[in-house]
Image 1 (cartoon, helix red, strand yellow):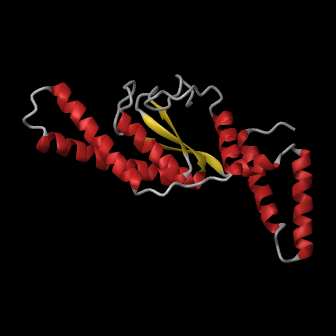
Image 2 (cartoon, one colour):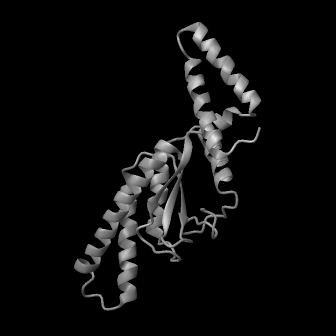
Image 3 (spheres, one colour):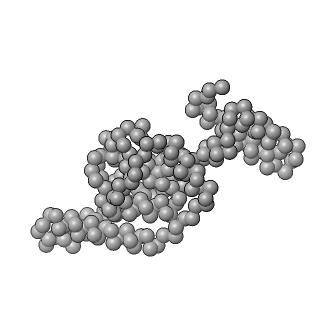
Length: 205
């Protein structure tokens, strides 16, 4: 039987409930739930990975630092790497549409907190950068030097943030599932640019 995405989603939700019941203290209820779950998994060719991946997804956040088509500054890439390390979600930069954005990939709960934290810190850093340029670089006549020095300030600010972050250590299973979900969701995702990962045109649709 061929299922569409919505039908598969409902089936996976049902299976997750059955698997939860299979851990019931009531032995009869647990055995019955496990039997039903195994029967459905055989009937619809659902694997344990399929069940685990039902908890994986994507969350988008605004890029903040760049507009569509612009190159990613180093400090923006540093921030996304710090969020990846802190929360165990992967970041993909997408500047192919009308608005640049960051797509967070991984367990849904982790992508949501990573997206929120990135947005808060990105807007704070953007404000700090503007203040630094106005207060500290007023005497700098060269626009190029002003931008370069502001970039260096932002990179130093991000290094300070990184020193206060305790990295999250994903399990081997989490790493494998994240890689599997990413390959399924973005099958033609290219190699990361040295200043941020990107999507080819249309890949994020």
